[in-house]
Image (cartoon, rainbow, N blue to C red; front, top):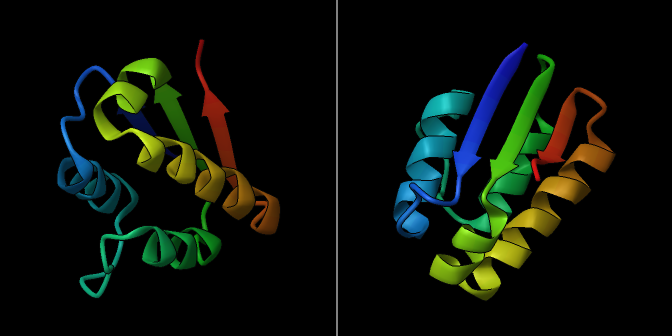
Length: 90
């Protein structure tokens, strides 16, 4: 199983977020580093994958509304792809 841990205390901006996602999830070179491209890649995941979001409030403080949109993309993608699980760690 592949696990991607996103720590809101560490992520400083959107670019860093997408770099972490692309690296930890092995996205292809054509990954567009935006929410639409993220959804496309997540719904294509073939191996069991968990995305764990830590320190959500810190991520929201840094990314604002983008953090909420990101969380929605994770949730919708997990609904569409049974190999993907999204967990918000409290």
